Image 1: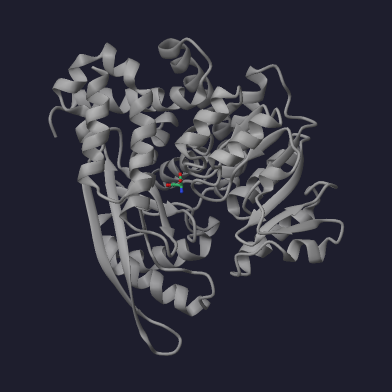
Image 2: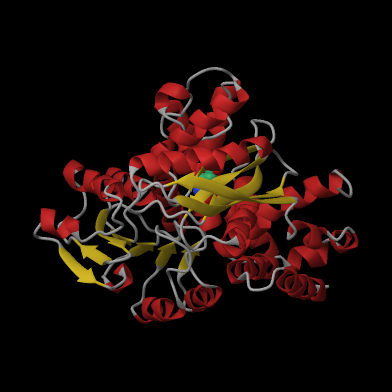
Length: 448
Ligand code: 2IT
């Protein structure tokens, strides 16, 4: 029966040549499902894994816009609508120069399980473009977003597919895309999430992903007899996710000492814990330069390490919050050698499969991103409910619900791994718990 898993991994590689990030997540998820597949032979008869790894629909399109010099620019646009067994497709849009189908499919595939783990009725999808927003003027970003939505609008809708932000897509881009969507369809409906507070956005959505990661990490530590209070924490990135994480770490009495960018990392041993320091993260993001060094110019006690990763800094808990594969095998080995106990992934697929294995074999508790960063999409779903009900929820209502969801996700991961592996393995547990709900829905809905 485990042969079935191997065959499906191989088939996915053959059918999606060169899409290494997609292969990586399929291999990671399917491998951990072996005991589930053994228990349920009916999944193989229904070709469930072949169906799960094939997006229900993939849309690629041309995006044409004019830059500030009057030059015509052409980018690629994508939306992969992966799985709608438990709800409308839901997932972000990523604008980054390295975007190609392998990246969007990896994100879309992960999103299926993440969305299922939230316990909310949302299917999985993801999209984006190879457009690079860094260094672009505001007017260029607006023209690009309008051109992108002029094609995408026909494929999405509040009951069909609800996009949101991801890397390179924040409040500004959602605003420009929503404006264009509304102009074309002539309806005010919640077809994008992460909207501005005055026009349908949920209070708390900006903080949700970062808060959720820290709440998940808190549960992970608690389950292992430790308290997040008083812990020293190293994170990567300086964007929206890192900002939310910094706020919640301060709330819970942990000491954040690093942030990072493509240029290197900042070590602030006094703690990144004042309003001014935490607001600096948003300023760095807003600068459009994609560098973190200016933090050390503003706060001279902090040190900047050019070209280095924050993983070399001493900490009790490490939280990657930047992008995929930021924890490689050598980082994992160094964690094991230094006796690190906890790593909680914030960015989607933060670690290579080899790194996860090294960390887990070395006794490190790893919180997988598809569980730990589910707070963002969970809050998006709350925003969808708010829009559908034509109402507004208070920040307290949203955040209380979100906290409950994160505690529930940790429990679901721990319970599933105990049931199928007889141990506390959140990585396998997240895959299994996320998978079972979707798999059962697919079985009940027949061969579609
Ligand atoms: O990776 C993610 O979960 C997101 N980028 C957020 C998706 C969403 O629909 O809010």
